[in-house]
Image (cartoon, rainbow, N blue to C red; front, side):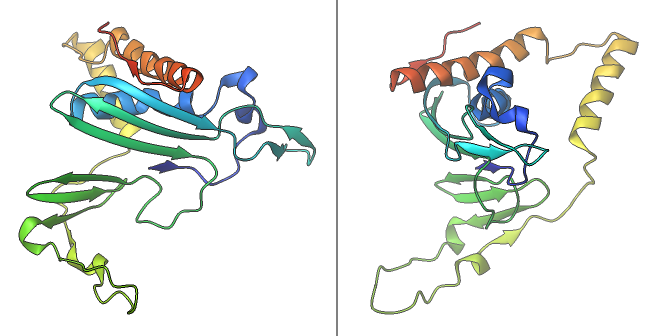
Length: 205
């Protein structure tokens, strides 16, 4: 799941100013899901404001009206289910601020913002539930770090470089206005799902 635990500017916690974490993050999850795992078909989303009062930059308390946590499940093409928890109110105890775990029949991968760890089917331990003894399996040790085969630059910088190259050389650019609209669409569908407390289908744009 995604988390940004540091205090953010006070305006970001007022829904009437800029919306909450659903508007902020589901736009991003759209291109992650569509490009890596499968086209999004439907969403079930629950938002929450876990911290209803915050302190502004001048030390004054104010009512926080924006959702600061989001619990979303997505149905993708190919019978893939994805679940993303996004929060501005969680303390981090994992490999990175953002971690994605992908489970398949032949193995799993856990990717952070920099590193990726994998566990093959043949290396998967077989834990046995036994509440009478401490857990004997050191689960973290069963994962192997993927070797760094190339250096990755700042993602935002790389995106701008691709866009500027497209402008200068007039080359094809896959991330057009419609791609941005699909991100906004998923955020809107997430808000709709929360309001209806129901699954919402994603129409083709």
